[in-house]
Image (tube, rainbow, N blue to C red; front, side, top):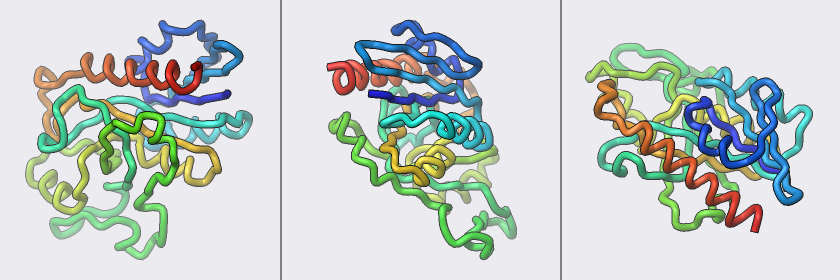
Length: 220
């Protein structure tokens, strides 16, 4: 089997890299384990980096499944910090206009008829059937202004926020490759005091989940 894992940063991936004999080629790591090929692509943060480097990878590689993982912000009602979950719905939340106290996306501006909201119909969630599922939004600008954050939350009733997820879903929806996005909660949305974050716990937990997927579904 050939599987691709994709993450934004090395920080989110160090435990996985330590586990297998990866060879590094620029921002892509490759390991051969029991006749299986495991690739790890580090894209950098954000929509543009994710879209570009994933597309470049897929031009010359044809993995049998693709899994994006990393940390994310969550609403306090959704889960405790450190918990892991799978993303079923994504939306580009801040591509558009902030006007008259409201966000207007490309659909509302009559500039796009599709691909603003992205639903993953892949069966890969069955790899970890016990995992909690979530709806997420992807932003290019992390909002800490309390009024604009309240408006954004009201417009997009989601559980999770990241800076890459919708870009990943957008690219993969144009392929026939099964895909899955999994995240761990590192902070609450809008909380910018990092002393209140649980970065290490979230990174450790999401890496342990990735290793579990490899051990129990790929290498068994």
